[in-house]
Image (cartoon, rainbow, N blue to C red; front, side):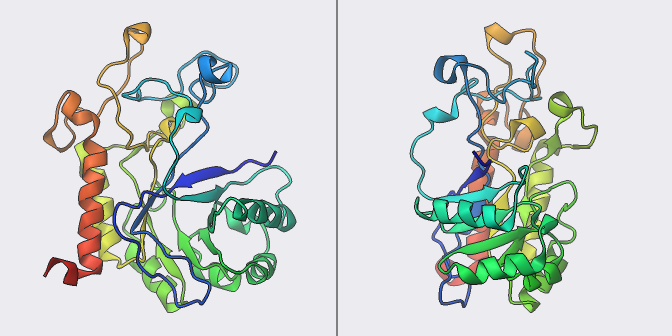
Length: 292
């Protein structure tokens, strides 16, 4: 089975028209990448993604406030897009098959991670052959995305794209008649999961705020958030516990304590609350008439 990861679209505020194309799909103010790949022995027969492959070592520097959960417990979401990840043997024909299958599930928006492993001309032919969808390229190469007939771009990687280049990217995208959905995130720390030594500290929320300010200033068509629950890379905004449960008492984990001046249980949801704040701020910036 081909691998793809869903992106849960939090329709925190009203969606706004985002393209002049006749077959355009409305873009929400904010979308957040959500990973449905977690499993537990009770629900799935084994730990899935909570531990490093072929080990029993916990694979995150943080611990979910609700404990280690199975994604099969998740409720029905309001709207879903697909984040199409690279997989062995991915071709334009296999991607077309993926999209056509997902369309039958009502999915119309597709974010393509590392798209230019495949030729621009193949993407262009694919996009032009399937009406009623939107296709976004994870790239800063606006010319490539335009030539490949993508509808827009997003950045996803909050290490490589820290906010300082959002204004330039969105200006280039709009000049090329593409939508611009830069990605913001609270920080990055994948040391425990992968040994990656690159770290983007959260700075008690200052990193998240800085990226949101840069995104709004860039006048984007929407903002994408990396991520809701990518616990491996420490980009999650899902509530995290101050300390792990008794069963994992020896496990040293980080927390959100101190974020936005909050402590203890109040800090667990700090990034969710701040996300609502920034989405509202973005909506006001996009449609100031709503505040008059």
